[in-house]
Image (cartoon, rainbow, N blue to C red; front, side):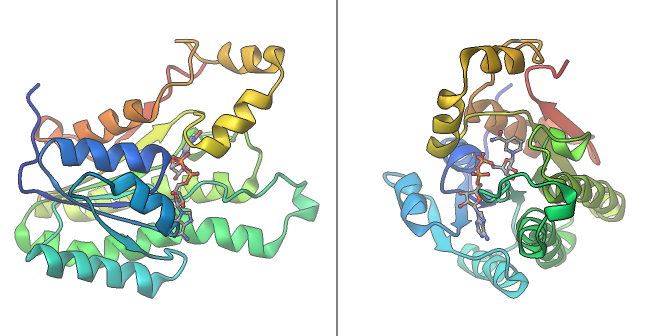
Length: 252
Ligand SMILES: NC(=O)c1ccc[n+]([C@@H]2O[C@H](COP(=O)([O-])OP(=O)(O)OC[C@H]3O[C@@H](n4cnc5c(N)ncnc54)[C@H](O)[C@@H]3O)[C@@H](O)[C@H]2O)c1
């Protein structure tokens, strides 16, 4: 497969670290004009260093700010976004708590970035894509979008299931306009320095028990996720929409 994105306008959320950083760098290496946003301006600047990736600090928990960023990207690019990747999210450092003790602010924060931001971003980007008669949207969901989560965090599982639902619904709505909407569902990865530290601190037996639930017996790398996104955004995936692609080494 010879995949290139020369001149294509690609907007990626959560580009500062982990999967988002790998996704931005992969698109840029394939010729795209990449626009990345994140809450963490320092890590984002580091991610973009030495590349042509344009960066913006955006708090995606603020719907108006999310929509404004899409407008900024379109203005800077001089046209509609070709590929929108909503990757920002995660459990935001929240710990698991029994449902009786789960806190409203934790629920709201996790839903805001993982799900509501996707709604705000897609709503803002859809008009330009519709007019252009083309576009690709890829959401980063999770195994937690398809089944109960290893984290046990209720808000995270609910948000990712919601994100999968939004992905499928928008695929149906936007398909007649030449726009595909798909999701990559990563499995567990030590994708960021913080997550790598947590993984490294786990007992060997505990790590092995997790690896035994993965057919390929490894966690994978952020580039594995980026490759899934690149495929879904490419011409090779032109007839694929409303699909959730697990990239997880085979969950047993
Ligand atoms: N790492 C895993 O094991 C795993 C597994 C399945 C799915 N995922 C999903 O993959 C995506 C990326 O995960 P990751 O592990 O690479 O990184 P992560 O989950 O630690 O963070 C993703 C990025 O989102 C940014 N972000 C958080 N809140 C934000 C906000 N309000 N506004 C703007 N940006 C914000 C963070 O700064 C970070 O750069 C997330 O959606 C996550 O839920 C991760």
